Length: 304
Image (tube, rainbow, N blue to C red):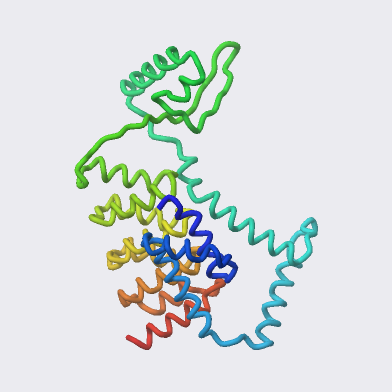
C-alpha cells in the first residue's frame, strides 16, 4: 500500500503504452494485492476498449479542431509569445500543477477554530515548559509537540507575534465503532497525509458510512490529488448513490474530474441507479475524453 503513489504513475504509463516491460510484472503483482490500484487498471482497460470503438474522426473534424486551437492562441495577449505547441504544453502543465497543488488549498488557508481560553492557556503553558527544557536541537527533533504553518511578525522593539499549528503524536487502541476512530478517519481525509494512510482510512471507513464519513468521502472525491484515493472514495460512495448529496457529488466528478477513469467510474455508478440520461449527457459535456463516455452512455441507454 505504501507504494501506491509510485504504481499510480506506472499505471498511467501502462495506459499510454510507455511502461518499461521490466516494470510491468511488479505492477501486476502489486495490483493483485491492492484493490485500489487493481480497480484503476481495470478502469484503464475499460477506457481503452471504449476508445477503440470510437469512429475515426473525419478530416473536416480535424480541420475544425485545428482552427479552434489557432483562434484560441491568437486570442492570447501579445506577451504570450511561446510557439503554439509550446504554449499548449505549458497550459496543460499549468493545469496539472494547479489541480494537484490546489487540492487542499481551501482547507489549508482556512484559519482554525479558536480554542477555549482555558484550553489555550493550558496548551501554551505546556508548550512553554517544553521549550524551556529543550536545550539542544536533538531534543527539538524528538519533542512531544510538532509545529507547522509557522509565521512570525515583529511587534514594537521586543515582542513577536507567532502563528502556528501544533500537534502531538498519540497511539491508542479503540473499538472500530468508537467516535474517536470515526473522527480520526474523517480528519485523515480532510487534512493532507500520505496516500497510503488515506487509502487505509478509506478501507476502514467502508464498514459504516455515517453522515460525517460520507461527507469526508465526498470531500476526498472532489479534492484529493491521488487518483487511487478518488477512485476508492467513489467506489464507496456508489453504494449510496440514491442519496441526493452523493448523487450530486458523482455528477460533479463526471463533469469536472481531470481523470477520464474517474469520470467513467462516476458514469457507471450513476447509470446503475438509472439517473436521467439527459443529466448524464449534460455532465459529460464536450470536454476531452467525452467521446468515450458518450459511447458508454449510449450502451447504457440501449440496456434500459
